[in-house]
Length: 413
Image 1: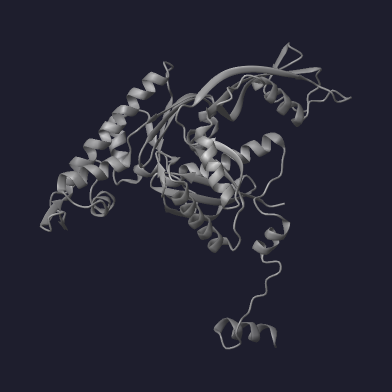
Image 2: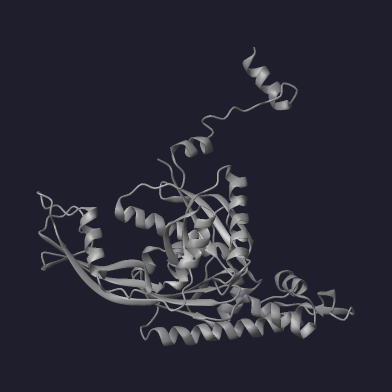
């Protein structure tokens, strides 16, 4: 069975939908689409009707790309008020041969949070930190081992139910089933996950349009996260306010003229805009970059402060991603302000823009969870997979076309 997973990242500026197929542990992007967000503020749906129309639009784009609408997705939910807590649980092994199965591990995980969740909170994930068999032996991978009892120590991650409910209801209204939820930090970590990260402590930062998320990971386990209500949109507002230009022009100025590091800018490069009074105004690259750099420095300084507040441990890495990191010379600015921070890029063909970090990472995160549970999954059923594969499709080639003549030459003689 083909493993095709769809992910949905609902942001303030854009709603992003990515459909990918896992082949030999490698992600291949089948569709990567986006549409302007409507009815959404700080990742929360504030106007259901507008949000539903935007969601319909992005799923239609995906359908036009692949040919079939995906009806199951994993969704990122707002990270506001995330709670991470350590918990423990156990299960007895009921199989006659006493061999630990995948179901035993799931039962132990479920037992670790049983009666421990507030009714107003939603469980996002359980991340095991230690397994113990028969209360004596600590193991990394218990599946397949023989034991009477399996105990688990884990970090449970929860969010307020208000972060989840409205999103699920809006998707249900357009006939989309939510198969799992995650927060952006988990997705971003799994987007760049490697052995080195899994063995150390560090921070993952996503600078989006309206907010910046800072999260701490200890050996692959998220221990804390915080949302800073500032992002790339603030740069647009600054440019618009100072030069008295409209938001469309300020966005263009940020994306195509200004640089994140003014030291790389050229005063001789300039462009003419029209301000809100109808007057022509000439803006050079250096002056615009000075404004952009000032705001981005503020954001990065807040990131530094937040990392220090979230952990007292020595960190080995800081990964920075998100749409705002696409600003020209952003890496140069980060390099001048941090010793160990790196801007990580989304490299998958078809989704090479850092604004898709969370959406692409969601697929990798869910694939990891599927492997843990030894489960097969696809957003499409067998008939739909056959249709996508073109099993029942016939290619119509005109005899007058160049391709038709080639077919005739090779196969009619």
